[in-house]
Length: 253
Image 1: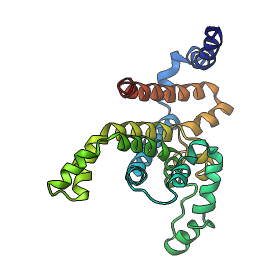
Image 2: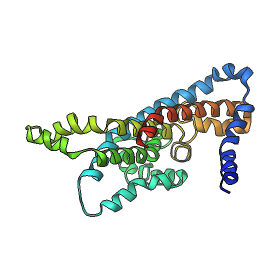
Image 3: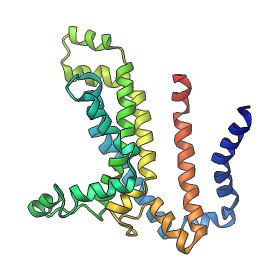
Image 4: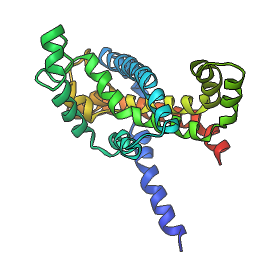
């Protein structure tokens, strides 16, 4: 009795991807991928997603360690707040970033007045928007790896005279490296596909804030074939990410 709805669900998920492949302009694919606007959007997407992932690693790994290893009042609330961007509509996240980091925002107004730094509608704004929506993926992955790691290795390092920083750097990080790598890959893929927060907080300016998803949105109005080509690139990246994480999921089961 479950086979029929299972097949319908599978078809619902797979057929749109098949339709994308069937309608793709394969004969002109190479030419379209070489167009300046496509290359510029791809370059900006790769650079901003990589920078966002680096920022997520810099901030997210310590945050995951705090949630996993340090008991403090309100830890459950903090954990819930960290995961809010996972369920928050990205457009709402963009509005929230504007209210905090905009030129008249809570922090952005001070940055503008004190240092002349303006973040909205800039490439830096793209990186911040992608970081906001992608960091929970890294935190959840690293926190889970930290909770699964055997504390006895860290305790043994402490008894041998290692400082807490040395134990973290030489023992804890190698133990949770697979979790960090998996979280970083998911984080990068999520940043690469971000749309709502980016267009709300950073806008859609070619060469400055127009990433691949934004280029797809714009191309749908003027050149649907170009939109399909850009979508194929993002689809290929998604498949590559799933392939990279396959061994981790198989080993976990």
